[in-house]
Length: 314
Ligand code: GFB
Image 1 (cartoon, rainbow, N blue to C red):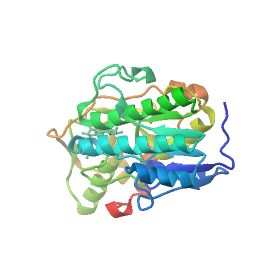
Image 2: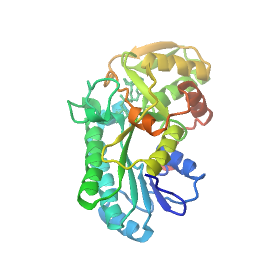
Image 3: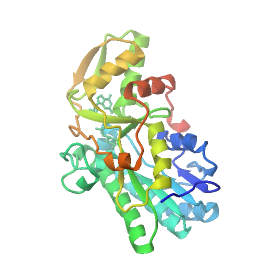
Image 4: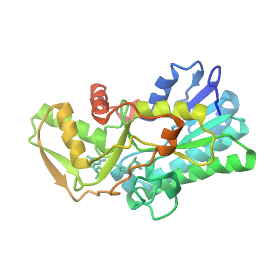
């Protein structure tokens, strides 16, 4: 199967986010027309607004990178935002894409869709085989619903749409708010600010023992274009680096990149979340794709682009 992007109108929903921005950058080297629409143009939670906008824009391809995202604490504190907003965004865009007869749609989820104690590395078949991690079950259920929604349109209407499940992502344009961000950007900022202030310690949430797999957003964007072109299948596809580190090791690596040594203080009043979520990406590798940015090089690149976007810059 090979779908050509040449001459196509490609809507990157969520273009201002880290993932959407990486996909827009990656599409610059493709001979296609990239369409974007900020929330001031169309509110993706509003069904009528999305249908009206889509009827006019009529893209050939939709990359669904728009979502309410956040780290472990944000997921734990704002379950409505993570469940309701993400359900509305995906339902509105997927149904409007059907009405606009969109040829290819790629839905982006997350590795948190898998059971808390799934076998490691986690194969795609592990989906719905056990209880979820409580801190992010809201986001996970929304993303599982998105996978099922895409499958429903493939089954009932013969759509050739796909779902992609990336591991924990990082990179330029990430959210660096210390309360709502993911661990990698949070620790980059914490070490950066500790260095500026000369702090003797950096506080790490949890025990430092959980393991996490990380992938640079530019690698994900390349996998998105690869799969848009090559993959036509009912089941979702894992996109990981296959490399996992403990939170403590991550902090030590970030200290090296920022070039600042501080004492690590572990705040065990904060949740560890799921102990591991290393994905099995062998299905993607068997199609001929693998990541190219190592974790240390990726952290160096992210730090070189480090800037703290305030909410109104989103
Ligand atoms: O990246 P993170 O917030 O989310 O946390 P998850 C990963 C691990 O890093 C947890 C620890 O064990 C945190 O306790 N950690 C240590 C920190 N220091 C910090 C810190 O300063 N900030 C943060 N945020 N964590 C998310 C899901 O789970 O994974 C999302 O909640 C999404 O929905 C995302 O699926 C990919 O990796 O635990």
